[in-house]
Image (cartoon, rainbow, N blue to C red; front, side):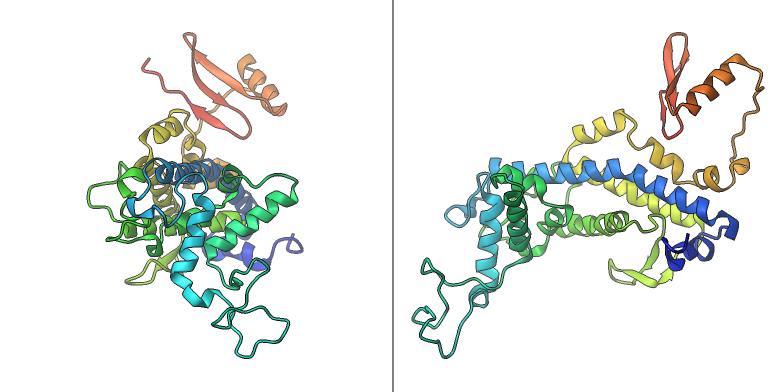
Length: 344
C-alpha cells in the first residue's frame, strides 16, 4: 500500500491518532469517510457566501462605487480590475528606459498594446483568477458571461474578497464595512470584517486539507497571538482532535447562519450533518477499526425474519426504512444513516 500512499501520510495514524499498526488501514478509510461527510457543509458555506456577495453587490451597491467600478452582474470583472489599478498603480505597467524603434510607448516610456493602452504586466490575485476562469470557459466552447464566471470562481476567490484591501471606511467605494450588514445580516452586533475574515481563514485551512486528501481530523496548536497553526506542535489523540474538528464544523454552520438563517435551517432540516457528527467521534473511528468497542451494542438473533431481511437488503447496497405506527423513524444503509425523531 505504501507504493500508493506515503509512509508519512499513514504514519500519523500511529504517532498522532494512537491506533495500532494493524488498524492503520482501517483508520485511513475512516478519514476518507469523515472527509466525505464534511463536504455537504463546505458546499453549503461556499455557495451561500458566493450568492450573498453577488446579491449584496448588485442589490445594495456601495455608494462610492459609482463611476469607479460596475455594480451590476459585470462587477466580477470590473471590481478586480479597479482594485488592480488602485493598488498597483504604475507597477501594473511595463516601462522601458530605452525603447526600441519597434516598441510603441507613451510619453513616459510605458509600453502600449495594439489598442494604444498601457500594456498590463502585473495583476492582482483576483484579476488572475477571473482571467484564468474566462480562458477555461472559452476553451470549453462557451461564452464567458458574468454568471458563468461567478459560478466557477473557487472558495479561495470568495474568501479573498473578505481581505482588508476591500475595506474602506470613508469613501464607501469598496465592500466593507458598507455591505457587512447586507451580506452578514445575522452576525452578532459588533462583528467586524476582520472577525469574519479570520473565521473564514480557519475554514479555508480546513477545506484545503479536505481538497488535498490530507487527514481531516489532524489539528495543530495555534501560534500565540496569531491565527496560524504551529505545524511542529500537533494535537494528539482521537478525543482532542475530534473535539477540535467538531468545533470547526460548528463554525462553518455559524457562518452559514450569519449569512442566511433560512439556508442554515434547510441544511439542518434534512440532517445533512448527521453522518459527519456520528463519524467524528471515538465510536465513529471504532466503527472502522474495532466495531466490538462501540459503546452501544444490540444483540440480535440471526433467526429473526426482520434481521434476515435487513441483512439481505444491506448486502444489495440498498436502503431500508424502519417504521413505527406508520411513521418513518430511521433510514439506513451501508453508507448512510439519517435519524427521524419521534415523540412516541
